[in-house]
Image 1 (spheres, rainbow, N blue to C red):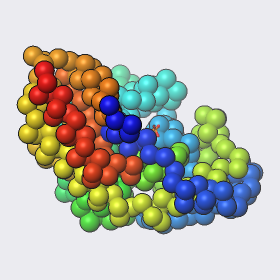
Image 2: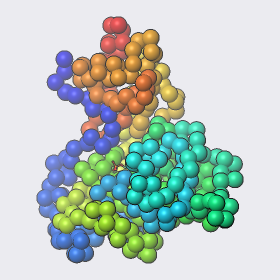
Image 3: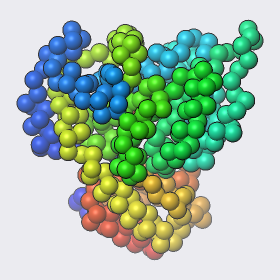
Length: 347
Ligand SMILES: *Cc1c(COP(=O)(O)O)cnc(C)c1O
């Protein structure tokens, strides 16, 4: 039994480092609902600039950021088009429907990547029988797609189609920085195709909480109202904004290490009996793999490896997800592979 738990469940499990905590403790704060928290204001300015947008709004979570985006773009009775495996459609309780009165039309992509041809006939006719097709959302990197990077040319083509079809566009960029670091294509090049973009500070960037919604000034002004009614307006939130600013300063380039560690982990998994990678290509910091049902279920696998100090998530009866991040090193990856290999050999 190991003392240390190697936690690969998600890149959200990272804990603020002493240096990040020091930045939080030193943050100058005000009351952000009254508009005078200087650290929140600075974060919003910095992230807007970095995303190539006019303005930004600091919100508690990526879920709220996406929900506010949808709500600013759509009215009740509108429809959004999204990819079938995306976070907005699967993991946010259909907030767009519950809270905004909006329908979703999901199109199945390959590892989260759509093709322009699939969208051709999806705009509803403009008569009273139909909802109004209003918004297209994409996710980059794609979580359920295995941390898949959207091919840049596809993003460009689909967004051009959306614009020409009169649709608004939203990018769920919870892990946009992973895509940027892996490709060298900077965030503004990705985001210029979208009317709005949401980025998370609480994933690979290692902050304890917070996301930002970025877009044009008038869109963000409207977003302020929606954040308030959803209960997302915070007071001395400069303490959290300071963590996000620290993350932007220190934790972006190092995402490349997470990507290298994910490839290393995948190489280990690849060579273990009864385990099979869902996709051989590891774009960023996530890997998905299947366990042979003859060995047992994914839940049993997860239980077993946890008892030996390795923590992963089962996402389907035979599927497991592992994510690399700030708090797992190359040595941790090697140790985890060795533990899993010995468990699989033992049965
Ligand atoms: C994590 C995540 C979100 C938002 O999650 P919160 O936990 O609400 O911050 C949105 N989209 C994607 C792709 C995500 O992975």
